[in-house]
Each structure stands twice: as C-alpha cells, then as structure tokens.
Length: 419
Image 1 (cartoon, rainbow, N blue to C red):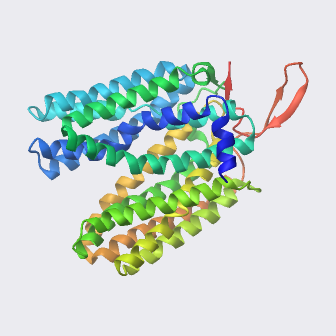
Image 2: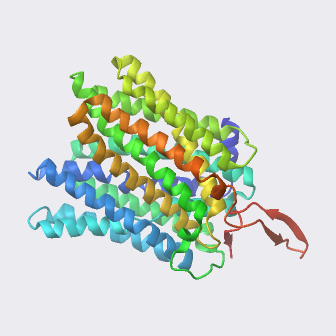
Image 3: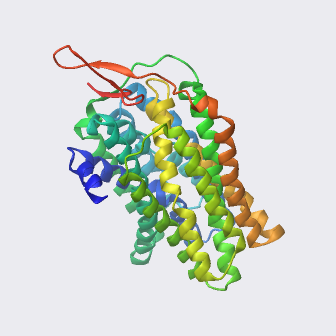
C-alpha cells in the first residue's frame, strides 16, 4: 500500500504540488474556527460569529466555480496567486479593523471567501500531466482525499496553538500568510506554469452543461449534508454526556476512519466503471451513518463514528474520477470547483437542519439527518444511473513525438495538457 503512494510522491513535482496545495488551502480549511475565535475575542456574540462564518462559506461557494472557470481560460498562475493574495488581504482587513464597522467586517470576509483560490481543482487538473498513467492518477485522487483529512485535522490545532501563543488576530494573519506561500509554491512550479486547459466550447453554463456532472453534484450535495449534520449532532451528543472532550473523540474517530478507508481504497487497482463503484461506496457510506442514530455509550459511539468515516474518503476519491470523466472538454478545473462548492453548500445545509432537529427530537434526530443525507445521496445516484453511464466525452487519441498514433487516453486525462 505504502509503495503505491511513494511511487506517486517520487514523481517529479508531485510532492511539491500536493504539499503546496494543502498549505495553500490552510486558510480555507481553518477559516470558520479562526473567524469564530477572533469574533469572540473582540467581544462579538456567537450569533455574529456564526453569521460571519456563514457569509464566508457562501462567498467561497460562489467564488470557487467562477475562479475555476477563469483558471481553465487563463491558466493557473494568472488566477491562483492574485486570488490567494486578495483572499489573504480580506482576512487581514478583518484582523486589523475588527468590528468598528460591521459592514466593513462583512465585506472583508466576503472578499476573503470569494477570492479563495481553487487550488483543489487546480491540483486535480495537473495530476494527469504530472503522473501520466490512469492508474497513478486514480491513486493520486485517493491520496488527495486522505491528505484533506490530515489537513482538516491539523489545521484547527494549528489555529488554536497560534491563538494560545499570540492572539486570534495574529492567527488570522499568520494562517493566511502561510496560505499565500503555499499558492506561490504551486504556481511557480513547472506543471502549473505550463498547464493549459484543452480547447472548450463556448457555453454560458460551462461545466454544468454536463448532465452526468449535475447528477454527481446532486448526490454530493447530500453527502455534504450528512457530514455537516454530524458536526452539530456530535456537539449535542457531547452535551448529553457532559464532557466537551467527547466531541473531539467523535470527530477524531470520524477522521481516522476516513484516513484508513482512503488509504486502503487507493492501494488497490479497481476495474469496472467508476460510476458503478461509486454507487456501492455511497450505499456503504449511508449504511455507516444510520447506526449513529442509536447514540450508545461513548466507547461504542466512538467506534460507530470511525466506521461511519471509513467510506467517506473513498467516496470523495471515486467522485474525482467521475468528475474527470463527465466534465465537458476544457472545463476540468471548473468542474472540480463545482464539486467543492456543492459539497460545502450541502454541509452548510446539514448544519442548518441538524440544529432544529436537536431542538425538536433530541440528539438521535440530528444523527438521523446524517443517515437521511446518505440515503438521499444514494437515491440520486440510482435514479440517474443512465445519465452517469455515459461519460461526458469520449477517449482522445494522441500522437507521439514521432507523429505515430499512441493509445487512446482515458476520458478526462486529455483535458489538461502541458504546453
């Protein structure tokens, strides 16, 4: 298993691109907790903190596909680095100006969110040109999903460390400065500088004109809903047991399960259509969420949380392959950015629904939102099976250096090319 991942990391530029992307995404992965801690430190209410975090999340959801389309049209360096700098300046404005003017504070988080660089989609667009073979690209998608879990685990810990050593304002400034350095590392690399999207058909819908991609996005909205609801349900469960540390254990178990599942998924070479495989994985994901409604004792609940997380990273990794197959030619970065946006909006919806569910029916009902989200995601995939069965574009034949015809490229692998 480790040998396969080491093979990818030994490829030229691979380790730099993966590390730079994770570091560059650190501000986005920690923004919500950093905003809440800063708001409370400045004397703001939890309501204000939640509103600012929500505005940031919605702004990011709007900006990602727009910036992704810009990357496909104009290349990575012209979009990623300026966006990272503007996003960091937005957070810096919030840290320096504070809440002397609420409209200014909201404007700052809107700028920070809208201009969050689409580094995730950019990395996935680069993998084919860096790794070459379909098998290595698919393994890189799994490694990418696992690395996300690591980032979302370490990121909040780093924010709290910076807050304890300096202040919440300093944490905002340092985290975003680090993010700019990560984006800079990516865009200065040769693959990022030379990558060009394949020629695209002019269409105002862009990547969204693919019915297969729309079906996938519909499903992953509900996967996001399930995951978002668990964050609220976990807090309610911890309150029921009178210990805040219980929440940490549940989230850590969920992340550990995702790490294990993603590592195992990426270690195997899979055959057959990824769309069919995704239906099976999402079915298992939904099945893992349903027992959480039992809300047993802390030890048993922690085990159930770990099991529930096992199929999350494989589902995300497999979805990357499906996006690659169904994205219209020349829209690969935009398509991946839409997946990020849809997942994030679904998570926000899950958080919003789980809160009232706790008030109405207790903790078990909030975990029922997660189970319902998983089931709904599966229903979308099953009901759109015919649409997903047909990739959005056919294999592309390429010519080798001597003008001879090489093997056809897997759909999607010809979308990003080096100039």
